[in-house]
Image (cartoon, rainbow, N blue to C red; front, side, top):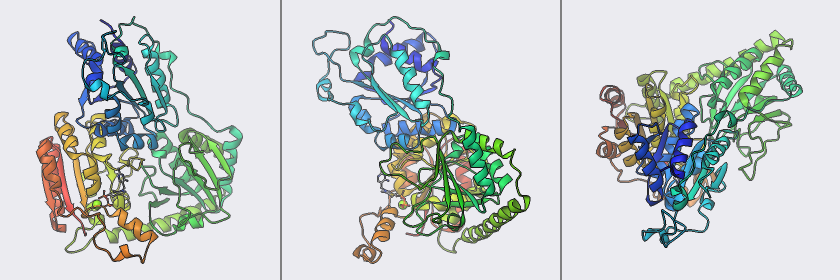
Length: 569
Ligand SMILES: Cc1ncc(C[n+]2csc(CCOP(=O)(O)OP(=O)(O)O)c2C)c(N)n1
Ligand SMILES: [Mg+2]
């Protein structure tokens, strides 16, 4: 018996999908039968990872793809499971994460007209008019498998969208009878389903960018995600060093530039102040950034020349977007930066000028570093986020991978975690909290030999479904270190309110409905769900020994460790 479900499974295996993160239901009978059959007959299929919550399933696929570049499968139950993917859909779409999602639909017949026809009460209740509509607006591609005959072609077409810039999630759905249809096996030639080649600059445009940067007095690069492609980082470093350009990370979701390089000018998030490097620059190359600055607070000088290179410079998913760029190019960053570097080979650079620029930035860098060093000495009786992050940095080594969902502590984590190498720092790229736990599991699956360290706000720890995450981490042997920046609840909404109403009633109100008092036992949740090693630290001197014990649990006992660190409230 070879069904549409069996053919879909075969297509995913052929396409190189290694894992299916599944949350199964009555719509998946054909798939479950096909998986069981393949396993019994010794045929390779993607490994099945049981995900007790869909949001964690998709976050795990998200983390896996961030780490490896490879799209995985997420299988969810009809419209209910699709809804339960929740904000992870937003994160994958906004973060440009390739992932294949499949959901069944209720059977389309009720009198046994075809195998799979309705035989459970839930099939009436779960029948809705527009299941794809739930995710439309977030998917790069969505479609219904209407007949089984060409399901493999649909899978490969969907993955082609997922992998093409701007990358993102794709969604297929099918009625149970369609998945149960007997089909004739189809051979697909994967050579005829290639990934799209990355877009390049026209030669004259690469020459223009090279000339504008070379001629500028104070060139600055602003980026958020060039680091998703390690080759782009190497090109960026080369470019900056040869012309003496500074680099400012804005809301970085990857490690984009070595943070100890003298040209590195730091990172910005929601700080309510002007960044001096942005104000001083006369030529700014924005490359791979969704929010290069927040103009109401922090902007380039009025006569700065702005150049914008991005795989999606129109930001087609964002209704309002402009940055005043005079030159806009749709291109892949690694390709474009390499082209600009090649053009610079033909430009006679003024060595004195390059030296002056580099030494200006080096001076700013050193000053910033001094301030950061001062901050991380911390306080005598309270664990500051800067101190905590510095302790984590010293404990984990430079190859460890840090995931940050620190929210108001995004800056402290970016500044003090000391990540220098591409692929050692990740933020979700979206705005729906709760990515960190599932993503850590996915990253560990993608790179089992690396130490994975998830740093999360207490709110974001709760958003991430820690019971599901830590159950999965034990079940699938993906131990990681989880550190909770416990500041007593949601700090960000208070900051947001104070930024708009600095003298308002809220500024004098203690209880704004944002505190988690009394706090849950965060580490205890993970211990109960997945046997995690649990630590609570309240004093600065307790931090380093607790991290040491936690890392021993992760490395030697191969189990997760959660360190709940009490920060100032
Ligand atoms: C799914 C989701 N719900 C709500 C929000 C709104 N929100 C933004 S920040 C924040 C608080 C996060 O708390 P925590 O992780 O503890 O970080 P803190 O603000 O305390 O630094 C909330 C609720 C969101 N971004 N995503
Ligand atoms: Mg918090």
